Length: 453
Ligand code: NDP
Image 1 (cartoon, protein in one colour):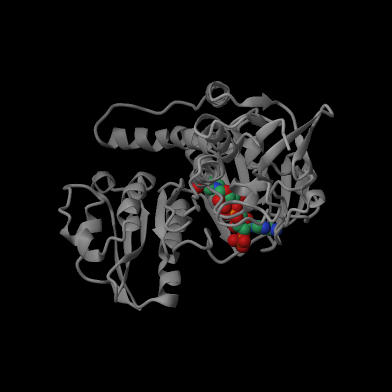
Image 2 (spheres, rainbow, N blue to C red):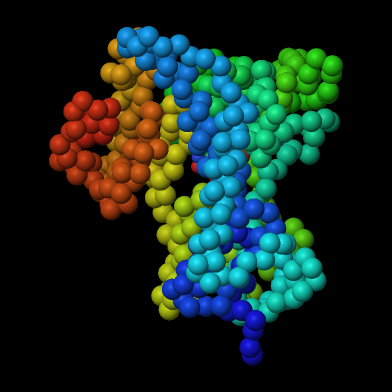
């Protein structure tokens, strides 16, 4: 049977674009890709990239304050949000164009519209045209998910809206305690907004290392974020003076904006998956095997739509591995073990491997840990502390997890991640000579376990 294309990709985010490019350029496949929104997907257009630029912008007031204490005669001026925002959007336009050019250069045909699966080998475009393909790759990502209640929740904004604000809110309430909530709490706090954060649980960043979570929460509070744990919203109303919010701790307060960062859900509705017989999981995610293949042999899925590890570099790996497997003649399962990641709070958090709590469940462990005031900020009497932590298997001596809370932790954990992925033992770390004076030298100088479990 002949098809219009060897591969039809639905979704132009990180995973879909990588798969399309590799299939077309290295696999010499005839490839089409449909994207209904902007090329680049969540990461480039409304996620990691604009967020990180805002992280940079928000760090300057503290840097200027530190410069002054180091002897520089400087003072911070006002932040010109519209100027920054317009610059940001120009940058996103530039990056989107690069994604588009890379696809075109690889020979991928682009359809700027929605595509829906009709059957295991056919997709229908928004204009009614149908295309057949030997393989279909679903890389439609995810979307912001708001809680169903309470009443008035629609008055809230999401992380998607943040990059388009007309003006910076003076009083912002953030709901949630995950990556997005904590990162934006720190960003807006750095930009001068008064930030209040409500999190329903006992400590922010559930699932991460307890000690690291505690230190980040403490640092966020020290920097002026009003963090209310065990607190959720009950009622939201638009009043003349702002958005009135009643919360579960009995508090009533008024904010200029309320941002909900209560999680994301896979984009699997109304794209023909059920009709084609594709199995979905409990959260609506597409169920795939280690080769990203669904139960329908011609249909594959990569990235957030599969809800495995929802990170851009993982989606890229999955897209590349799919193209290698299906078009490159190399069976490539995706390795989801020991994926390093960072949370761009202030201070940052970098983690790879298991938390102390996870490791203690299945291993006899030694915990090497140090928390101290770094030279750079201790000099100007800042209270900020950093944390370096290694979790070591007592029997194999392998480092099972590394957790760093410090400025630049995202950069540091990438390097620690290489050693740990290679199976480094604690003694391998110890054999490495320290780089002095740095904060990360602690990684190779911690001699005595803080505790065992
Ligand atoms: P998360 O799942 O990390 O956090 C959602 C938060 O909302 C949790 O604190 C959760 O509480 C809370 N929540 C969920 N439902 C409700 C509710 N009904 N009422 C009140 N609170 C609620 O999602 P995010 O949106 O922060 O991030 C989505 C994904 O994006 C992440 O999983 C991550 O993979 C990715 N991401 C990665 C980044 C990075 O690598 N730096 C940055 C940003 C996003 P509870 O803990 O109790 O469930």
